[in-house]
Length: 179
Image 1: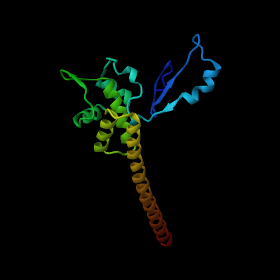
Image 2: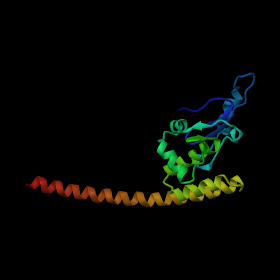
Image 3: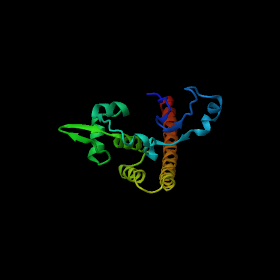
Image 4: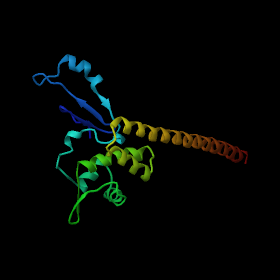
């Protein structure tokens, strides 16, 4: 699914918030020149970007939510069971609103960078809280920097393991070749 192109809105994995100034339905040269300076990259983990749609009452069925995010129905039910998603139930059917869509973006990016369910719950509580955005971003930065350090340590350990396996494979090849 490519980025939506209209008078402004939300775009994909990184989460770009943009606005366009139109003059007679045409984008002027000055606007085009300044477009890059008006774009603000907001990672999905930072929460909802397009606040104008929060009052949007459209809902997605579980199959639509699954297709939108490329996850299984079981995954959505799992996140509901863990309290990360709160779909409206109508009989046996589940319906997801704007808040759940925003939460799912946060969940998937947080999962992609390796955060645990406990950490994901903390991030959701943070981005849905009442604290000022600059404080939220600072705390999110700290969470992500801590994860970055952890991943760098894990990467170093994996690189050591790969080097050790390379040595073992080389030695075993030498033994096989001698026979």
